[in-house]
Amino acid sequence: MRAAEAAAFARGSTPETLMDEAAAGIARAITKFFPTPGHCLVFAGKGNNAGDGFAAARLLASAGWTMDLHLAFSEKACGPLARKKFRALRPKSGPKNHSPLIILDCLLGLGAKPPLREPITAACREINRLRNESNVFVFALDLPTGLDGDSGAADPDTVVADFTLTIGYAKRGLIADR
Image 1 (cartoon, one colour):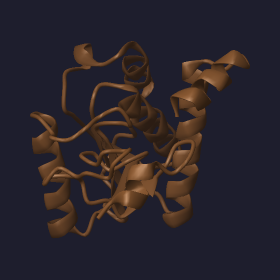
Image 2 (cartoon, helix red, strand yellow):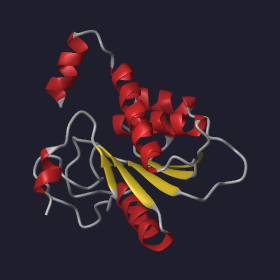
Image 3 (cartoon, rainbow, N blue to C red):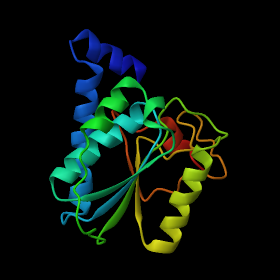
Image 4 (cartoon, one colour):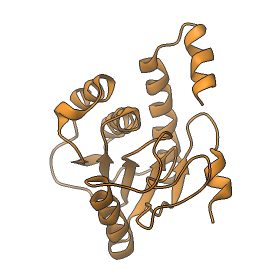
């Protein structure tokens, strides 16, 4: 993935342009499965995976989705681009539309390796609890949090995703996942 990003940067793309393109693809994929706007819970970390999620959530909100944001870290701890996308997100207010109900898992991205650590572990457990108890559909961005993108090794609390929206290409760990 890093080589693909380097090639895109060499052609003049910026990290923000790539993030916005990823977000548009994420929003398109979600609305293919769920064409009627509903309610989205965004579980975000602090890096570019979170930025992808915030940018996608902004697009979904503009299409009528309501949002709840669950930040694993403070806004100050976010990287500059993730913080910019977070600040640009203006979730639709008003009564929450609970049908359909989805979760965006944008806690950790490609570079993360098990084992998970707090506060990410607690967020993963909450996503999995909601999926099991509340008929929620989980969309993982690039990889389910807790899954090693290279080896497929999984932390015991890895997010159980109903959909994995890969960015760029399917990661080897998704195929190797047991």
